[in-house]
Length: 210
Ligand SMILES: C[S@@+](CC[C@H](N)C(=O)[O-])C[C@H]1O[C@@H](n2cnc3c(N)ncnc32)[C@H](O)[C@@H]1O
Image: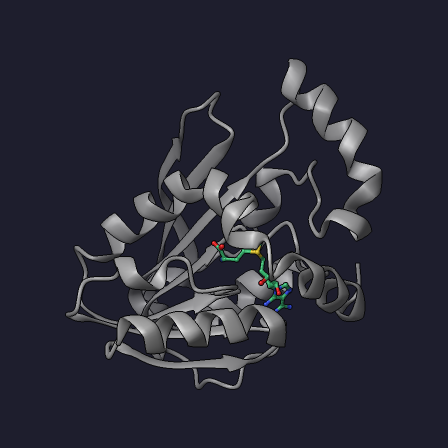
């Protein structure tokens, strides 16, 4: 899937997203934000989409969101305006593989249902780590591939349609664990059937990462 495929796919998803995938995936989104609301400072949401998460952030959390799809972002902007979400400081079009933010900038960086969508997930995680402050948290919520069972059969059946549906159903969790400055602190699978996983990683202080 290249960036044009993604933009085309999410142009079609945008009008129906909140009532389809957005609705069935809400449990993971709420879990991540419940945790983020225990922190303080500025959170970057990578692949913010239609902004389904935004109203759940506590007012003390500043939020910036980025996404490559202008159609998804338009939906997010409407929600921000309608709900008067003044703690959302910015949502803008940006490629998660090459973010226009300085190093060590955000207190936390979160990507929900993004990592199996992007063309180069390792590069996106490297960017998430780069823009996160040392000691800050990088959170990923996603569906990851199973080794066995009925879900793994379904994943393999859906996988060839990645370009059409807009994500890779058979994405392995191991591909999120290659950044040596990020230490895995927590991994939780959610009902129903543990389809979605919450990963909480912490960016080490530079002296510990060497
Ligand atoms: C499945 S949606 C998830 C949206 C939102 N995080 C949520 O929880 O509903 C994936 C989003 O990732 C965005 N995306 C895909 N590739 C991207 C990239 N390289 N940079 C930024 N956003 C990207 C898509 O445009 C889409 O809005």
